[in-house]
Image 1 (cartoon, one colour):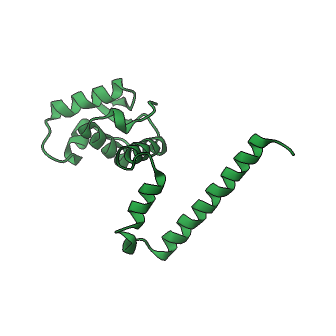
Image 2: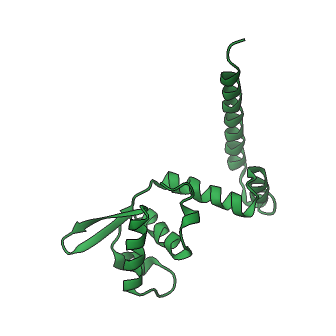
Image 3: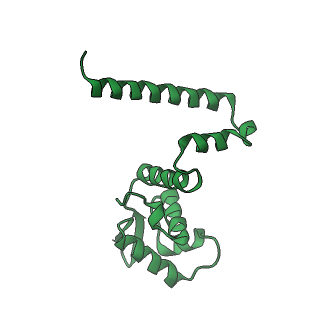
Length: 139
């Protein structure tokens, strides 16, 4: 997979990938039906072929139809998209991204979500300490 999946895709290609991740697998007609706007069938087929050439999509033949599916795992695509978002809008700072999420929209974050976020931060700190200890070696 390319290092920054979403950075290498056009807006329409990202939309197509979103459809495929949501559906799991789809024909060009199904992808076209789920896309915003009114793209032509031939345009969607062309974009699916380009995504396949880029290594993001693969297809299987079912009779006379091609059924498309993501060639990359959703987790890998999610990480790539998030990294691209943080790099683009928050100068690569996870702190700035979290501050934006908790800032003006704090009322939408539940107490349970804050507890889970706190637990993730605790786990990240423990992992970071373990990495430091591993690098420093035994004392």
